[in-house]
Image (cartoon, rainbow, N blue to C red; front, top):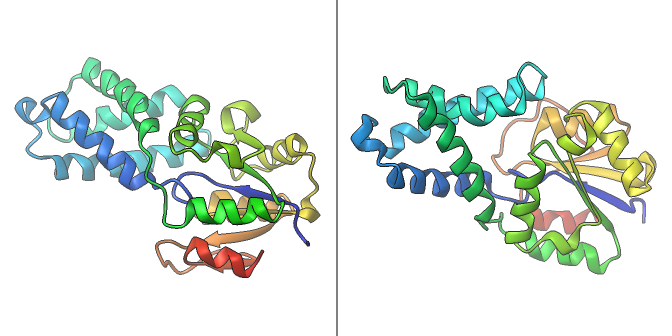
Amino acid sequence: MKYRHLFFDLDHTLWDFETNAKQTLTQLFESNDLQSKGVPDFDQFFERYSYHNHRLWDRYTKGFIKQDELRWKRMWLALLDFKLADEPLARDLGVQFLDLLPTRKTLFPYTVEILQYLQDKNYKMHLVTNGFEKVQYGKIQHAKIDPFFDQVITSEASGSLKPNKEIFDYALSKAGATPEESIMIGDNLDADIQGGINAGLDTIFVNHLNVVPTVQATYVVYHLKELENIF
């Protein structure tokens, strides 16, 4: 075995963030009766939320904003697009979202099967995620994939964010692993692939969206089952 330690990203790699977030926001849209408050329909709200969430996550990972600001401002900015300047509502939606989101269980196809396959072959598996500690633990527990992972490394615990080298160094230390026997598996070309490369790791780009890579990973797969061809 060339690799002993497999470091996985969670969101958008194993855990279907888009599907789970959309289900959660649908529930919030209805339970908070946002339509009566001036938001015409859910699809428009989801489009604006997604736009602001993506932009703010980028700023968060680059260190320009703090965690709390990300949590509520994605809601605040989405509501503002509908001329709804209600900060208490935005903050409340932010709390409700993070309470409900981790209870969603949709994984990408073949997630459980590939984790079982790798566990049966005695690989040590870990998660390295920029997500919030409590939220990420909730996701893997509700999705019932937590027993597969030896270590769960979050940006909160490590004091760093992917793609910074420090979070990967912290992950290797926690796992008792060396870069030579480790590989990073994720969907984000900057955070997971370039970050892994910077830390001296081989990498696997999980190209669920069939995009043209701008960073050269060691391997590229388009479906999680293809990992069986590598391991």
